[in-house]
View (tube, helix red, strand yellow):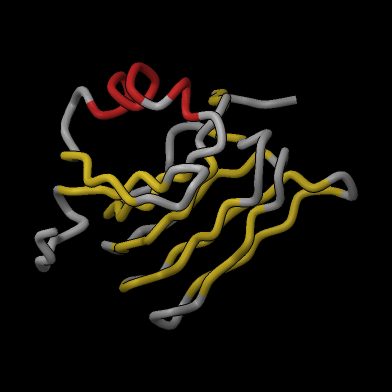
Length: 132
């Protein structure tokens, strides 16, 4: 077994239902490979870091589990469409995090370069320009 330092800017981690970690290159074919090689991502989590400098252009929802979102640097606001109404949560300090509940549509807004770590239950993730 080879143990080495890796960087989430170009390599993400897929965590299997058995909690085995597989390294995947973060490239243009990543999400296609995830669907093909991981049984449509059933029971898997994706651990990934993304940098944002502007608002997301869409909303997303994860029907099979809660998503954990942790701020590494910058400042970012997550907007969640909860059953009782829309709620905004701003991550300001490094290590601030929010748990996005299963089945909740969410988007993000930022105007500064922000690095965010995601632990995402990716099975059947949905995207929308304007969810209901």
